[in-house]
Image (tube, rainbow, N blue to C red):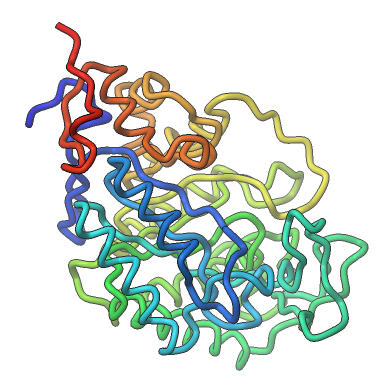
Length: 363
């Protein structure tokens, strides 16, 4: 079925060969609803409803590669084989509805061991729901947090092993897209940014050292997953803070990741340090995606206060991104993609069970 709108045209990814049926992708959004890392009915229904709603791919929320890598005690996990069964139930359902199942692999680093956001989100320092956090350097995220443990080279090597094992489990669980979380102030981003990484060894200091851990993770995962599994990387294009990670470094990083076979750079921003002034407005992060795409040659995904189909269409038409990730708008409306087709006069298949509700296209 042909489409005049770029938003509803397929996109083939260069390294994996995977084809997205349209350019609407569900951004990873933490649900803080797991116990001991296990997915449950909430995750199945939450992600399944977006699949029924017509998106091309769904990137599951930050899924911890180790228990200490969780943001909260209620994060999803993939650090043990027992997690696979419940996750496979989710991926099977998504595939039934023509959706590419994706997973974001993550380690929270110094931003771990916190309470759920609706209970305040503060760091939990004592008790059975607390654990010692890890970081490239012994610098807490906020002045109220405990000081994290600066990682030894052995601890760094374990993180790489944890990401690889998690990626292997993700493949067994049926995911066709793996996104490495190197944004929002979590562990891999902590190594990238001079604000959190003050190491003097091979993992700190100059740019090539600060990107070393991310490159080790990318290379190790690429060498272990099938070629038809798509690898994405999410970054914060800027820390929005002086002497921090910035756009020029992001462009340089993207150019290198493109050569390593990364299919897509998911371009977000911020999260490294608290209380920074971020000039938020609709599509405020899109210029970062545009610059990275044009300067590095990698495909990019735009995200951040993108809420309407015409807005997303303009981003694609103006060459600012290859796909658009929707987050809060898809929490408000799981069927956003189906509604967008009506708004834009496009015709895409609806689930058979919902055909009686499909409105006629305007003439």
